[in-house]
Length: 361
Image (cartoon, rainbow, N blue to C red):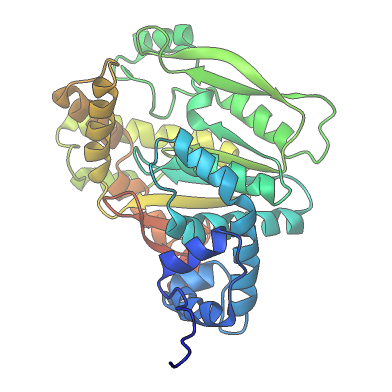
């Protein structure tokens, strides 16, 4: 009887599964992975993978994959995911974490990484996963949300008295910029002289209106993940609002949009603290509304209170009226001056395309 070699895993999922079970990748498996890593030229370039470095990238990535997988699987359980998404870990989260670690090393001081993303794009989840992966790489990361910089409930109530249009928190003008600037400047210091108190915000306070809660003390951080729905967004030409997309329809809508645009100027000193900026952008910005609907349905299914379908529509459209994604975010997707990485998101929350704006020309 002719001797048969054991079958080598060939699909990406099979190879990765073999890798996390403790086996070093065989030459055949590495040869199978190489064209997969190079298949998307823009994504490969974004993570520094070339035909010359592809095997070194596979070996470095596979070592980290084996090391981090047990804790990664536990985190996935906490997030309610029945199966750890190995493909996403291999193709996106792990190379991104390794790149952040490299940038931090080159910088020689704490790295402030901005993450811009609308509702449902996965900003918070990404920050949790990167914090875990960076810890395995020997770097301490911390998360700070633009939401954590909201003005107090009392201050926002007073603000609403002056401008009733600011009926919900979120748009420019509802944040404590002095607080944010002070915190980011402290976080940039290589060795802060005293503990840094990260502001935190409780969205459930005051029947959902939200308020400040106890700040979180940290001694220092190597990498700061500063995320929010318009982190890094910049003022645009006010003439753009003369022919703006829905739901900016009425003269009052256009006035509100222009005023919010003007307030963005106050946020530029905050954005100047960023060392890098990445954007998580849906292939269709209207997906944010669908994702918000799904999130509310899950909350109500678990016994929590949630908004009605119409309330969600009004809530999301309120954000679009203040800073419309088509006007403020889409132009940044091809802006190499201010943006380092773009991750376009499909309706299933998975990356559709990953690229650096600098590589598009």
